[in-house]
Image (tube, rainbow, N blue to C red; front, top):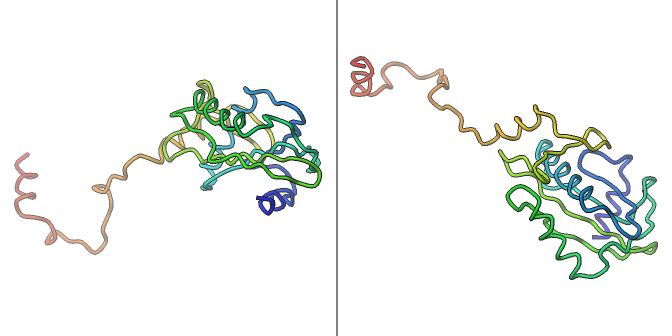
Amino acid sequence: MIGKLSELLKLENENEVVEFKEAKISYDFKKLGKYFSALSNEANLQGLARSWLIFGVNDSKKVVGTSFRDSARKLSSLKKEVADKATNRHTFINIHEVSHPNGRVLLFEIPAAPAGVPIAWEGHYYGREGESLGPLSLDEIERIRRQNMAEDWSAAIIQEASIDDLDETALKAARDK
């Protein structure tokens, strides 16, 4: 995962699917949940499989290290705590601990919201505009929800089809009704 960290640190700026937090000692659980919701929804909207929340890196992308949840047991319990507050018990794919020369870094691997299901945190949907965190717009919520709508195959036009391709019994039934 040191390679993934290096790749993310090379980004020019944070964006809708990558967020760096210093989180030197601790981090507010509710804020973490809002970022979880936002990053998951944004990954879905961008057609990505995952997004990243990184602790132990400051805004200028310098590794400063973190002692947030400094044991495997505490990190593991975080997955359940997030699932308890997110839509359909959605939670991290994994939480990767990286030993960097400048300190411990946590890479939270967040799955994209499933097709058709925006992810809420405590009943509210979050998203991002660039580096800013805020409510997911109604348009974005609907874009995610429409992903599971079945396509109406009966409304499709097949250019090479003719009346001869239709079933006689079906035509008679349609005419009778």
